Length: 156
Image 1 (cartoon, rainbow, N blue to C red):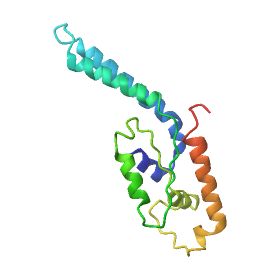
Image 2: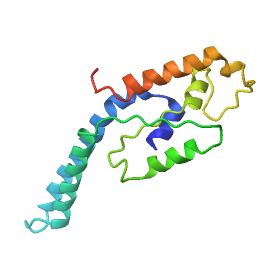
Image 3: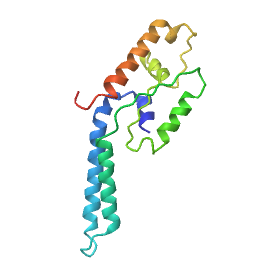
Image 4: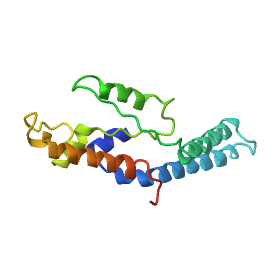
């Protein structure tokens, strides 16, 4: 869901604060579960205590994510790059903290020319949004997004 939102709106700056708010929300849920555990007859309710612990563990996973990794796919149009990366995005064992961000050159190229991700540019293979200059702009944008926006710590 995060990546669909990023592809549609392009608000990569939001990634700088997203982790903070996700941790905050998990800690609030842990507090609620812990408080609820003491409301039944004054005896701790194990299910609520387990939920509180699970939320705190989630908060930790989000607050201390694994080191950034850059994975680049390449291939001809229609060769399965998006399908393969979508499988990684949906695999909770790979992305338990919701920290995988997918950057798509086709989406960012269109964004540079004020087109929506699914718009047809009606460009010739070496014209319109596919000129050499447009390709340089596209890859410069991807470098900024991958370096500064996606991998930079909050507050930088």
